[in-house]
Structures are given as structure tokens and as C-alpha cells.
Length: 241
Image 1: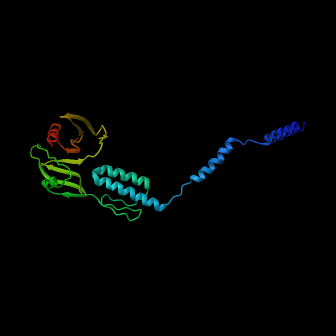
Image 2: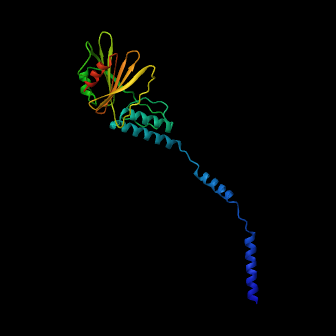
Image 3: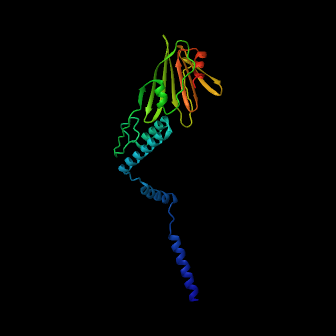
């Protein structure tokens, strides 16, 4: 008898305790937890570490460039670096072995442009420089230029002239994937393509008579510009090897 009453009292006490327990709103619980999480996740920015990291990224970009990664890719990487880090306040392109001074301002030297004989350009250029075997009547080579960045040649320009007009052939090395994107105002020029021996030539004919031919072959981009008819221009382009 006593045992039964004790059991009843225990059961009643437990039930009363359970009834007194209030379950909080789950949304309130989550909001409270979220606040603590956000506090713990608040970033602790170390400005010195940001500068060091920025310097390391820039050094990697310069090293990639020096290992035949290409001038265009280097510039794209440098632009991304500037947007991400916000550390560069004065940038000039160049310098083969930059030293890290810990400063947020990075100085890099410009590429150098040289005017020299075509024979010398062919000797020192880091890529094979082509010449056209055909030129329109009375055109002769007047000037040859090269743009150099350290030991890498970024561009060569061969300028031909006659008594009235100039014809310019520019060559640039290509590294990696290359997509030619040309946007023109239809009121100013027409663009069309010709394919000769597996090479696609983009031909742009301007209303003022200037003609531009663009093509690439063996990882070199060629641009021929002058006041020529299409047939003459294509003879020059297809003879450039």
C-alpha cells in the first residue's frame, strides 16, 4: 500500500515538473546561435600579412611571365592582382627580377623598343621573325622595330614604303589559347574571311581605302596594314613565311 502511494506521488511530481517546462521558439534559438557564430567568424585583418601576400602574388606573376607565359597573360594577371589586393599604387611594366621591399607600391620597368636592321632583329628576337617574299611594286623596307621585355620579344614591326603609301607588318607571339575578337562599325568598314592553305585570314576593308589583314600561324599573330587592294594585300600576307 505504502509502495503504491509512493509510486503515485513520484509519477505526479514528474508530470508536474514536465508541465512546468516551456519550449522556446525555435526561430529565437537559431537567431541566438547565429549571432554567436557570426561573432566568432568576424575576420581579424592583419595589414602586414596582406602586403606580404600581395607581394608574393605579384612575384609569382612575374616569374610566370619570365617562363614564357606571354606578355598578354602577364598583364591580365597583373590587372586581376590589382583588383584583388588594392596594394599597387604605382605600376610600370617590366623588371626581370623584382625585389620585395615590403612596400605597397611596386615599381616595374617598361618594355624597351629598338630600331635596328632586320638582320639584327632576326638574330636577337626570341621568336622567329618572318618577312614577305612578295611586295607590291616600288615598296621597300624602310624601318624595322622590336619591343623587348628582358629576354622576351613582345613585338616586331616591319615598315615598307613607296613614294605615296606605307605598309606595316606587325608580329606578336601567342601563348596559350587565343581568340580574335574584332568589333567594327559597319558604317566604317567591312570584314570578311579567306582561307588559304589551312590558314584563316580576317580582312578588314575601311571606307577610307585602308586595308587590314590579320592571321596567326605557328603561334605568331600577324597584322598587315596599308592602302592596298585586297588581292595585293593577300599576296603579301600569304608570302609571309
